[in-house]
Length: 365
Length: 227
Image 1 (cartoon, chains in turn orange, purple):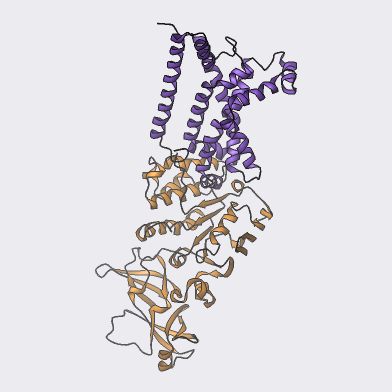
Image 2: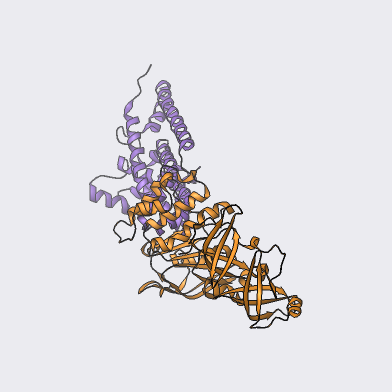
């Protein structure tokens, strides 16, 4: 169901953002695209910070922008997590949280102050000054503060961009839980494909100020028209599954993909039974006619060829495979395709090196 | 040892205090508007606000004397409403001082508000704080140093005014005879001992005030505002 309908235009010298899209009222939607594509600007338009925007913006039957007239930002009930957090330096962590909580006191909410503090582990930070926190702590406080304003919609502008890989890994699980635990729809701006696959329920891909693709994560990432957005080298597919076993000695985790298929991947620290999403880049998938013996590759899956896309004027072709009910992409040379005589409908063995999986995987549910 | 005459000192303190209070009320909205606006008229308003910095106090005093005169529109209206004249009165001095010290209140505040920037205000708006709420709960605390600087400079600058007072207020004991005028008077009558006493008090006062500002500026744990 569309909750936020957007039909707006913002003109800058040499660049125009023109977006028509209906955002859903639940889950996490990733606003994805290269830097300078206008995704952050779109977020600012939705929040009401971009006063030069014109067009129409409506949340349910509440109009936020009509022509040039916009509803004041503080009346929209939109939470905003800024990339630079913008915690108030004159207040403590507790003071920052109270600032939001106090101003939302009369609003009906599904959750209270303590729920947010607990979910984000903010208790130990209460007495600290906002300027003494580490980058990851600042982002957690910023998320908590935004949630405590009891927003109807939460906007997040690249909250992980300023953090190093380890800190990102620490914060990601908190973000993944937001829509589910607090029931707040999230629009999440990012240019990192890993964040999209791990967090998002839907993608809206932007390029040069326009929406170029939108829909579910797996389908949208599969679509080749996205090549310009994520780059051919990064193209791939997303596989969903469940943790079924942990090999503690070997630091391996076994993930069931359904349909009798399973993967062995580098350790994912999640309990057995947790749902995970794994992103497999097309270039990390190799094909064989039969199961080879004596190779180091652990993951060999029976797959059926659905489609073959030859890239003219290059050495490469992409093969779309059915893997149980899911899809996988393989990027191989045209020469290999010719030698293996790959045709649609053919049964093949898809091989994925365990090392190809993104280091972090997350619970989905 | 000559006992200092406390009358002019007390009068000066009253004048400077009143002027600072009034300017805090009038200058803050003006500084806020200047820091926020994109209106084309902004430079004009900024130039007018800065005028007292460059005009000789006698020029300012002269125009105000003309404006306050009972035969002029403003002075005449004041006489009709209150039964007193604006010229050569304490009230007239306050009005003149407000104009004379305007830039010392507005400029530090404006740059403090500009240093706060839009970021914290957008954050406040995203947390349901309206503009007035955000001004008091976020912009003002972040601009605290700017307030401190503005208040101290305004007060001190009003204490030190001479030319405007002489033009508008004259030299009436208990009414318009402030410290600077009193010192001038003592020198004119070659009473150097009394002049020394008052001058030393003013010197000490100015030094202590400025020292306090710099010490507080070092200690305040506020990152925005005038550095």
